[in-house]
Image (cartoon, rainbow, N blue to C red; front, side, top):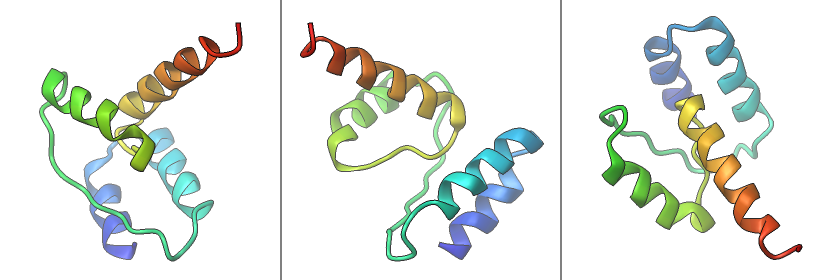
Length: 82
């Protein structure tokens, strides 16, 4: 996890986003596995894969994609509570 934190801290320039990322990671189990990769911002193929993998993982950063996937999951769940 420490390598993930170091890499993320270097790449994320926005201080609020960096702090939000650190808070998310601190709230997780130390036994969690972390993977990172570089993506093209706005790449629909990446978003489609993340949507497909959603039940098996969690997007931590970038925060904008994390928030988008959270909103989509909430909307999807709301369909079952009508």
